[in-house]
Length: 198
Image 1 (spheres, helix red, strand yellow):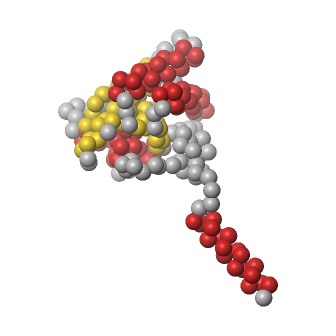
Image 2: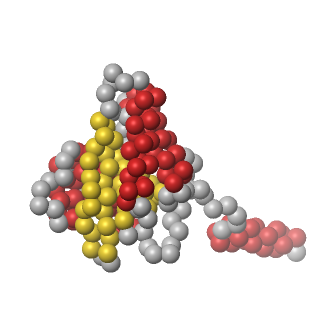
Image 3: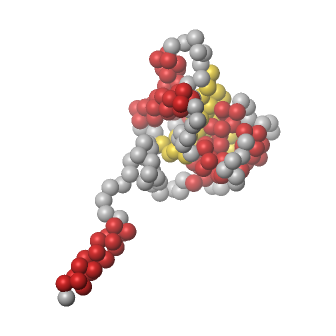
């Protein structure tokens, strides 16, 4: 199974592809698209769209993992990441690619075991996990490989992973309908009412 990981951004977008065979992972490709601030935003977003679309056509990934913006102190950075994420998700939807999302903390925990790991720790663990001879560079490409590792390891064959309930902006839609919990609450309330009448 090939997994494409994306670390979105308008200035620099990291990508990384890994192949999972059983429990083994190996690096297939990685890199970083750097756009110039001299280019207009529409042109930068178009370049991002073309890159992701080309990667999907070239490698035909079973899954595309996209890092989800969880929190940012810098609103300008958050807007840029959000715009790049939107273009990435559009390219995936156009290609019919299956998308999985992960927060930066989820990715760090999956790769290093520590949610506050720094960039260097992530790079070192990506190198170890994928059996690479050198540290993956630049940081954005290493982060994208980490996203791919996270998504590849948590996906189970034939299992459809949904979005977190609180994540209204996730790429995977929430499943609607009554859950077992909802049914249990409804039945308990009905029993309470029936007991109150007698």
